Image (tube, rainbow, N blue to C red; front, top):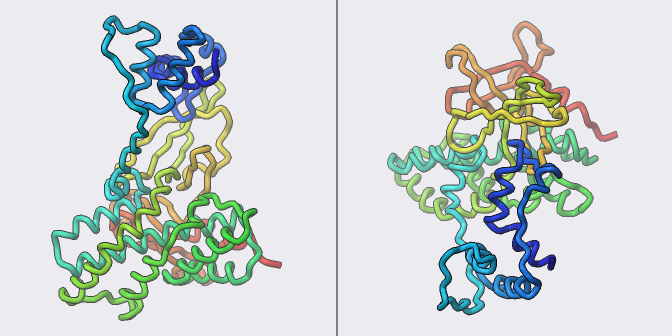
Length: 380
């Protein structure tokens, strides 16, 4: 059997349907050796294989099954007038609009703020500007949280200025410091190829538009947004075309799933977990039961970032679930803003100021491990 033929055949619908029926597992589909032996492979004469390879080499993928069926004689009807089309390379299908991708596949903290911005377009320009700033800040919070946790748990780049920026941005409610942390991490990763970010794409992300939005709208009036409809209209006309430049390069975020994992049971020598995928603009996070042969080396119950290899980056407490009295103790996905003032009863006790991603308000909670995380790495 020719290798090229085998490659084409294994990708055909005939084989894929067999694989779909035989494989097991939900998170990581598995096809055992025993099941693999049950797959029926069609092996025509070598001359037919060569013809098939030649026909498919420059033909669109959606014609492959038709040609396979013709060579195998599976179809009852034979088109005697069939002539292969000229070998022209068909253009790749267009990517889905970034607006659709964000609402249906982005991590919830960004997907929700983007939807709120879109909904505000029917209202005043003042509201639109406020939602524009909220979207920009949601992106900065998200990327900076990934960069900070990556530095403290994996990278451990020995640089005093970087560590100082990280400490400043968690002890103060400052977007500037978070932008500086992202820029510094990007710079180190570009200069030193041995530095492997958990999310390598961050090294090539341009956050200049977030910086421009912050400096233009936040810093000019001491964190007070413009209140003039005329001024806000001009701002939106300026930044609306730039939104795509801000969001388009962030498509890679769909490949890194924001999840919360909790153990469910241990059955048949396998650990079962409840996975809540915190993606898309829908806060009714639907759990799925997944099983793993090995125990997950993560802190279950925390908010985690998961890549395609099922490796995890623990984002706790930069993202966490909390409920409080004013929201009926219903848990919300929240994000960390800054260290709040120490407890009245214990001046040494650190507390976190967190904000709900569903606009349910802000709250103060105990440190919950942030100080420990920050102290895990110091430059000697």
